[in-house]
Image (cartoon, rainbow over the protein chains, first blue to last red):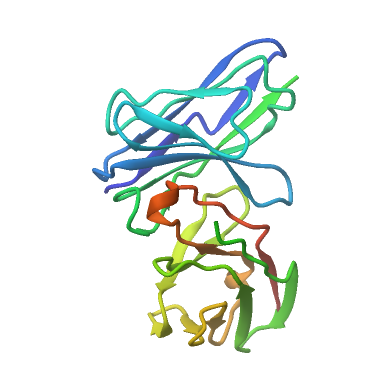
Length: 114
Length: 112
């Protein structure tokens, strides 16, 4: 089945460590996105990529970095510069970046930093 | 970018029709309106998308008035499993990049 795979489902890190969250899609979608969700809140856009080797900052990019070396992969690194990294992270993709095609989401990675 | 406003929460009972309205006063000409459903600890799931008038699929209907400044998601005969958060999302303007921004959503509670 086609879809988006985020791994791991739960991730624990010590404060001051960088951590990378994986996102892989086999939908042949051009665009990919990372969102952050805090308890009881909506989704906030961290980064998005419309095409390989290109990405743009979203609303809350500070303390995060991404790469898009392959069409199917869009890993997110949460750096030690992110002040409040504990959150639920969601990756999504869409067919293209500009035609309003619906988003397909993974099931998220819950990151806890202590 | 079109900002959306939805009620924070709604309560309903099993078997009732539920209507959730979303306001998007500065929607752009080429923007679509898309609704998503999210269960706890899961990613949002696409429900329905429309541009104008009415769209219906197997799970919901979407009503969009002529001025497109609002839209209403209609869920017929809800069940307990429809308890979730529902997000209204207005599609990006192609000349402004691809900033797909979610609002806070509407938390629907369906009671027996």
